[in-house]
Image (tube, rainbow, N blue to C red; front, side, top):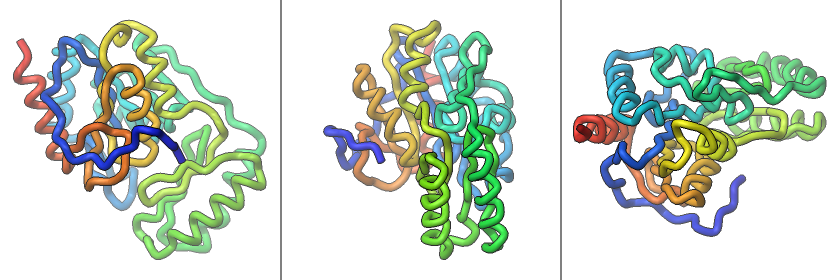
Length: 254
């Protein structure tokens, strides 16, 4: 997992979002949408769509989603309001001009997917999510299976020369490659993001890469949820608090 020499236990609320100087990067699950037991049960809602429309407008398009989900899933939840998406933890990216780049899958990943599907059949309640360049085992419905899932994911990944991406109630096997921090950096190299201060909002361990990247590039991260050691500088307590913070930023802008 990420090691960063400025890890802190975040407690302070963030300053208001300043659209004039910022580029905004948002995780989805646990950040702007509530986490549910089955990932495919997360759907669009009118409140979030309205917030995103206003924030994207006042920030002149400088909003990107950095998520473990696929681009298709992200578009469904966000109702297409956010063009720039770093999906599958950075393995797939849709740039502001709509161009999509993907880290290619491997023969080893195909075999790992087969083995993970077979393993999941032995543990009812474990959900397999095939994202193309990665495959995730969700165990939120059966938290008692955590140790078995992690062990199986690690064993299968090591045998195939792949890596495991740990998350909230999920173990994801993937090809080595881009992470969320890489996606943040890549977006900041192109218009309309270039030259603006990065602000990353997320809740999961996978967001730590983007928190660190934002800090290194003159911005900051905002951790969502309970306090923990994190590269994020600030914290918001919940999805509702994030939505309120985003709304205040949009409303307070000319």
